[in-house]
Image (cartoon, each protein chain N blue to C red):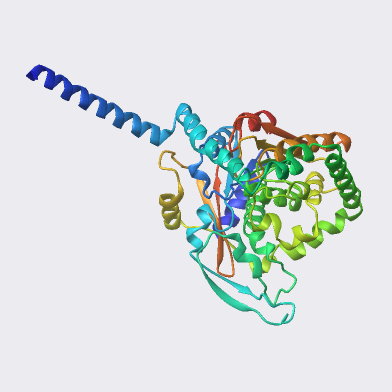
Length: 268
Length: 167
């Protein structure tokens, strides 16, 4: 801990000019096996950015360290709110694992808090250690949904690029791909995804000063595929114009489920 | 068969095998664009086609498909109007609730700070991590690894530092 404090003061004394890209990979696991991640990491590092690499819970670099996971659960919290049981889960990469999370000491905390808190606190703590003055976020696939949650919650993030990972509920009426967190979290069941978009665009003073960019690919066989994606891109672009928001979306032809680097570099 | 012909066949065979081995190695290791393109066309293209074939199985007769016409439907005025109504209603509701929305979200969907433990991994753990996760074809020099723990659940973050001292 003392090393961290020392680094903090060294960084403080160096002054401003520090910038960071936060990157959240999706369900396909570790970032380091993806060429597009390695390329964008090298590019942004050479341009003076730090790159914080994050994976989804239980996926990629979070898989092996969670071979054994233990969480308080209670599927019967409605009738037994003062009970929970610490359940030892055998390693899995399935996010449904979180669905019965319930801690009797923190009864207001929902299962989504297990899904989101890890990367949220990694981001918050690392930002506070380094005093960055330019903070952007990129999320791919399921990591795109996570990225938009973090942009919504952390107003210091000024710009987000969400690749093949986000639809509003209007485009999730049919089976358009996605995991537990896309369909069944308490927040999603009771709220609408538009709040996440609008909340990600306002700054600390409540003004619409932040920017969101979405990217989809026409040959995406997993989540957010064609024809829904093309339609969503058109509707989002119109919405951005109608409400005068920094909101734009791109539809990439002849590309699969990955970040389209040219579009990223040109617009982000 | 003369000895010369036998030798020529043997030489050609070895040459073809060697070329196959070399190209196979590079195709597998680096997957050049032409290989990726062909592979995607053959494999992923096939998956998409299979999905549409699934929809055209004997239970999905033409009249059912004609009734659904999803592509036409989501591009219709009816669906567009529905999207516009929802997105704009959500916008005006958001303007009214924007201050409480985030606070309530944090209370319910993010653990309290005293429920989590944040630390930086030491050099020994960094080395173990490096072997397990970094791409062997990419040298990673300047990085720090951090971990957040809550209950018996862990999340890792790797901070790759800029050479110019951006952070």
